Image (cartoon, rainbow, N blue to C red; front, side, top):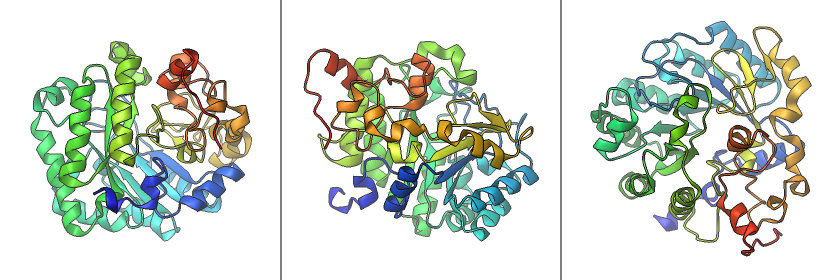
Length: 365
């Protein structure tokens, strides 16, 4: 499998499949490359730490007209990709029509789903169609039924097999494993051994790499702050993520789930209309139901893309001297929720601790 690594996987967690250099250019120009749109808060996974507070039935969501307006605005800004979030975007009745409309505007669709709807072969075929040129993310925190049941309201460990069947449906249709990922939200309730076992299973059995998201006490997840993992376990599980995804012990994006080129060229519109730098940062700089989206972008783009951090010299010490800062700048959501500053230090990065203890922290070249 290691010999099959594509350039976009070697580029340390980037998600602009096949368009890495274009995304780097957008980063240098401090422009939006991707727009995340949370179309609904409905989802059938029942994750107990969910920052969106998702339940099987929608209570909040963007209207079809609001979403179509956002897609038009995205095209006018020359945004390249739409990341469809929820909840689970595939539970909307009009998800297919909306994604077709995005494609008609020249936008690439990236679909972040629980994976449960993909068991339906007709749904899988439509997702395969609309995600051409983009990626599909599914969500199985643990491959161990007992651990999965503990992490989800109502248990339902059979959902593991449901998602796996859905992934196999996409693979059978020709979706490359390199354009699919399994997303894990890492919490202390899971533990590093099970997270590593799960990441290994997805890679070894189906060829999927892992988007490893750090638990943040955001939104509805705030009541579950006991799920916050300690630094030693973070180092253990994220170091193994690096080995699995990148095949190199000397490469790390630390406790980030994607590289800085994704985070630094992206904004989110939540299912309540808030415009934020990240779906895990729920506090917005404006709301599309009060202020036109294009006006919000004009006024707050620098905040949304963490503009000052695009210059590595502006990264907080010791990140500004880290060997990894060519592709990593720490998780901005963790910096916000655990330290109170979205442009500050990411306290979940063990390399910061190592630097403080006098361990090697090499200058980036």
